Image (cartoon, rainbow, N blue to C red; front, side, top):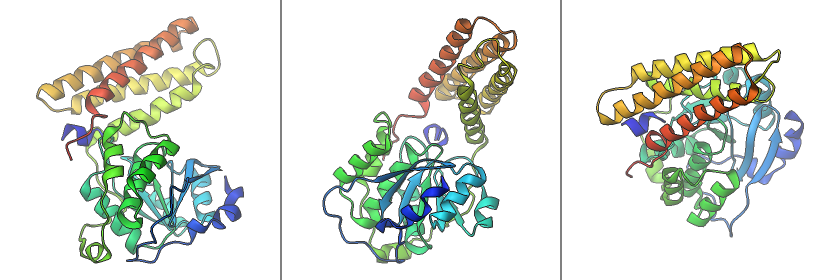
Length: 316
């Protein structure tokens, strides 16, 4: 359970001209691809790491504000499939005539139930489809590959090649396993899938808190170099580090008991202390080398915790 819990507009015409964006007919399976077709990569304002896998399936990062949703609308996307723990931006999606399906997954794998929901959505809802996680590198690509395996007869080598193209870290062994091992789901079985397709799936408080940590850490990282020393951005960076410390402490309070929980709480508390130290250093305009050293220690603390509690694959 613990592993499961820690879980540009100008190209519109060009992208719509891509043969893979005509959508799919509900309940059908595309002909088996010939060889391994590299996924086409697009640079799009408001979206990270956008790839076209064909079959009306796009994959990438979380839509960033109005620009991201405008780009999706220009590409003709009708349905968004989020596998991120962050709550989907339903208001912006609905405002542009798009529907969300929220199927959060962890870094330990896609999972059978999640794949069934995703396959049902791609088979029964209007396309084209945009499958996304936070940055579009790990969970989203794995989910997209699993769907392509289940519905469009992708081979295991195709799925593996796609994950390499997307930049999915090999350390996420569960994502690679589930993407390459997904089995075809026949149309008659799709019809029998009764799993709901919610626009928003409730997530546990710890998951919500760690999603907030991820976003705050990315914002702090974006100021690195400019703010890690005397600068006009140091105060903003110090405030971010303070919020990070508070979030880590909140996550530690939320974690349960038992050996795994105690180990995780220790890691979260350690990260909170490093973030608090970083906030003080940024607030007092300390030597940038000291600030950088603390930032690195904070990053290393997160990496150690991820290796133990987030990244290992769950048992299939």
